[in-house]
Image (cartoon, rainbow, N blue to C red; front, side):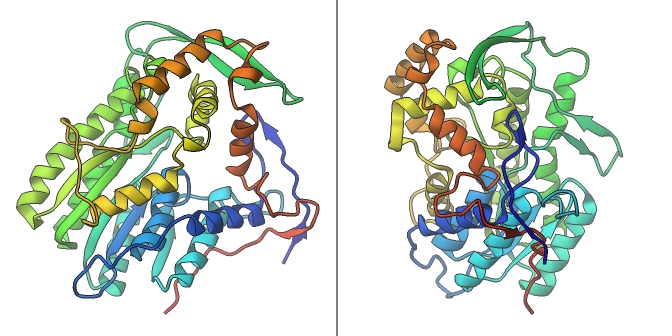
Length: 405
């Protein structure tokens, strides 16, 4: 087994290597932060769950919280790269190995599948595992997929998503760091969507694939009575609305919410089930760091809230409690589960907006929690994790977890 010392090497917010021990420790610490819940099934069986996008961000939090809080068993689907002779595996590769170990510690039968969640071959593979391993019954499906492109299995067309405003160009503040790690607040202008930009983004990030998953599994009679499904989403602050909620990604989120309403009606008739979107709060993720303005916004938000900022795993505890009936399912007027109220409180947004207006390269260090933000970015790749000796060699060729018989 190859071992080497791994140091962080990055281009902006993108790191070239990941640290296996750091990724494993993060998953362990997430699991430790989840208090055990009460049994949720009267027959004593653990609920069967499918988490699509299980290796990163809120999908990882959903998997960890589901294991530690609810005792789920089932399947996690993600798309990660294996270690090679030149590079480590992706952070999600190592996080998945650690999540499989967490499942074993909780006595949960979890199978992790690596591949394209948009393609029908993955759907066939999931259906086979559900049939052969879990009695042909799925209780919950959590959909948490963020991707730059998608190939439609039906048409063969490939769509590419874009981050653009709609109607007019948008100029916003954004936070970057130079090669020495010094912060720089600058204005960045993004040109508006044109041509098929909106249609393409909706095709990738909207509800089409989520609906295809439900249809695929329903046609094979794999949905249990009372089946529930939720797609994870985000609304965000008025400060980022032009590039996010009112932009091309926002159009995709609106499509996702419309899909939820349609699926909810369909599932209620089919299996007495339900579908909803879960609007989560801000977090530093590999996807969010690519959005102009989000780095500055989350840094300012953390400076306002401090330790009161709710981490993803804590939000997903609340989501699982609502999905399993441990707490009442609470929906807003649009039929969405809202886990972002702590972020969008008027007093919080007013304080962040005041700091946003004052933020410049010279002032940002006093207004934003830059140490927290840069630490969060490092931890996405397993670096800057307490308790890890980064001067020690570490094994990099960690195998993909194999399901026990």
